[in-house]
Length: 275
Image 1 (cartoon, rainbow, N blue to C red):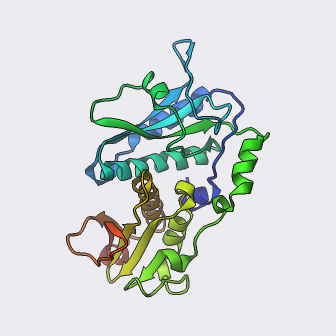
Image 2 (image 1 turned 45 degrees about the vertical axis):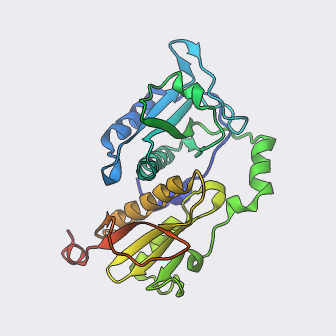
């Protein structure tokens, strides 16, 4: 799949046809899940669940936000903030893959019944179900609740400006599209990343040889939102042949209002030789 096109194509789908995933799609998704590794050396896993298990219908409550979905992706993380970030990175990779298959998805973090999912999925003592997403065939008929969510809150269709999210050398100097150079597209894909209530509480500082990623504390979902943003950035860099890797540095520019998460270390030598 083409990452940039897929990121731009992805959108939340809340109403489905009710048709269970066809066998070929189940096989493709499960094969893709099996090939992925959780980043940053952390532990997390994704399970594809069905509302029908052994011939018995299982209610997977989403409190009216989702209708007609027969299958769900479930993210299971260790009870650790950075494990949640790594898990969200992993989960977004699978969301994008499903988007490339023309399947609908929708990130859901707080409005679902975790006990329903625990009936199907074995959870260890140090694990938690962090987020879910329906996955299936989008209905052409939109419900009133779905129209209301999109139309009544314009935040869901908007994004913060480039200079509000990205900075050049210091946090007093906004990075612009004109001054971002080769990082324009990777950062634009970060800007398009979904986040809880579209808060976009991550910030990026372009420093010499580095891009430092920070977050504004946002209870419950800041760790998840950061993982999605990190996924978009790295996958886009790889697609564009821009070499580098994530590292958690001991020394980094500090900011009283932001919490440091990780840095992208630019590998100019590998880029020069096309490695």
